[in-house]
Amino acid sequence: MVPAHDLLLFEAKWPQHSAAKAQEIEARWGLSAVRYYQVLARVSASPAAVAADPFLVARIRRQRAGRAPLLRESAEHSGLGSIASSGALELPA
Image (cartoon, rainbow, N blue to C red; front, side):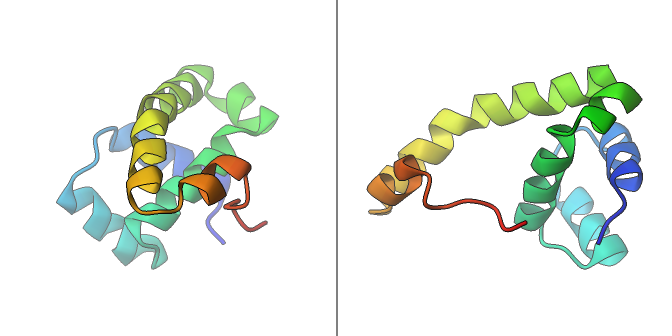
């Protein structure tokens, strides 16, 4: 498991997604970029993260909200639209 504090520090230093960032994520934690962003979303939803760095958490949430329409559109084109919109695709705990 990746410590939330480490994740937030890393995201603060690497605000833009890039191939180099994805490689660093893999090297540090053995996570794919997709899984990293799933974990980051979960961490940014916690009150502790907001207390630790409210501006960073606000940026993470804004970026995620901006991608939400793209994710829905991608799911619809892949045939997963009804599953994705039903909430059946949830993150594991």
